[in-house]
Amino acid sequence: MPIFEYTCKHCKKDFEKLVFAGEDKNISCPECKSLEVVKKMSATSFMGNSIGKCATSPSKGFS
Ligand SMILES: [Zn+2]
Image 1 (cartoon, helix red, strand yellow):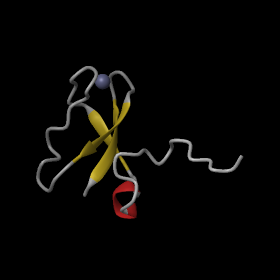
Image 2: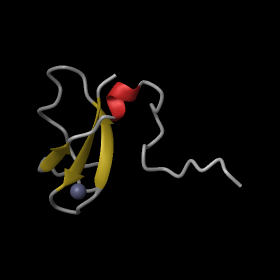
Image 3: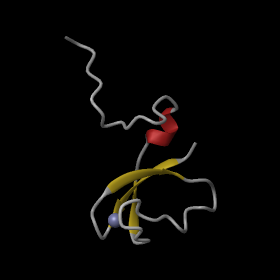
Image 4: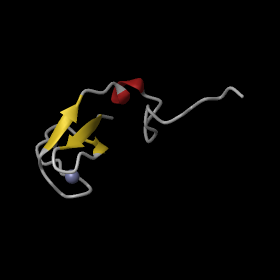
């Protein structure tokens, strides 16, 4: 599934959004509802095993 990362130009919030083909024109910020968001390059959607979990979340299994 195509999950893209966006950054809002207005409030600088980073968020991820599941975007289907042809539906990437009306992405709005979940915080301020601004449509001025910038898509960031991310390989998250191609990993296949990190859906719903941000790649940047801590996953240290060593203790
Ligand atoms: Zn915003």
